[in-house]
Amino acid sequence: MPTSDALVIERMLDMIKQWEDQSDQRAIFLNCYSMMTRNMLSAIEQHEFKDPAWVDRLLHRFADYYFIALEAYEHNPSTAPPVWQITHKISQSAEPLTLQKLLLGVNAHINYDLVFTLVELLEPEWAELSESQRAERYTDHCYVNEVIGRTIDAVQDTVLEPAMPVMDIVDKLLGPLDEMMLSRLITHWRDRVWNNATLLLETKESTERSRVIQQVEAETFRQVNAIMGKDWSTAFGELL
Image 1 (cartoon, rainbow, N blue to C red):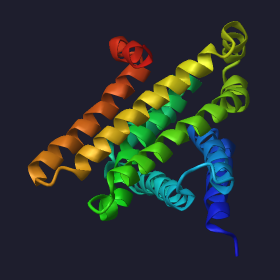
Image 2 (tube, one colour):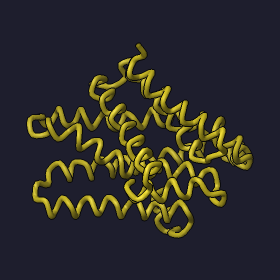
Image 3 (cartoon, rainbow, N blue to C red):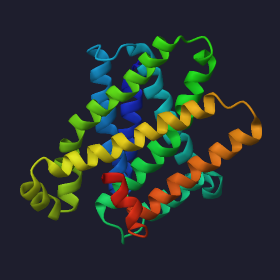
Image 4 (spheres, rainbow, N blue to C red):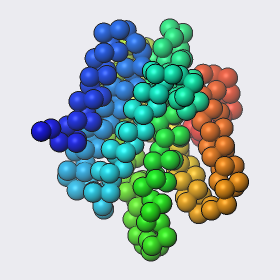
């Protein structure tokens, strides 16, 4: 029987093939996500994290959030989280650039899904964790940025450049600068994700929790506008 690691990769690759056969541009983000997932599984296997077992659970539950939202959208778009509704809709259209479609998926999965994945996994243990144990969880969360950094160049070479040849010119002109900018953007997003997750963990009053969740949702939509060129101040602010 295939391991859970093999199954999650197989599920991604099957979906990518189906979408590529249909010329469905949602394959762009999922291709990137599958590469990132493989690199994460390798890092876990190499014991690069302080608590590899916890990171492994996080990785698989994080993937669940993506596929649950996808299944909801495919069955009845209105039942999917709003940020995924707009992400899937835009990513299936011809107008946006390949890079925009990739960033839309990254935004929805990190700025939205990851917040609630972290809360779900941390909530049962949060009150009992010491400060040093909480710091260990945060260290592992931050180390994922290192794995992302190692993945970005391969994503540009194998996903972006074939679909968007101008990226090859940008890569040659800027050298590592373009990868650094994208890595910096994602690191900034992931820092905010941790802050939002811990805020939810420490907020017990239901009205206040609802306000924080609405804030998370609003932020993901601000990023959609920035990615689509409707809010340049947000876009540049994230990179500076």
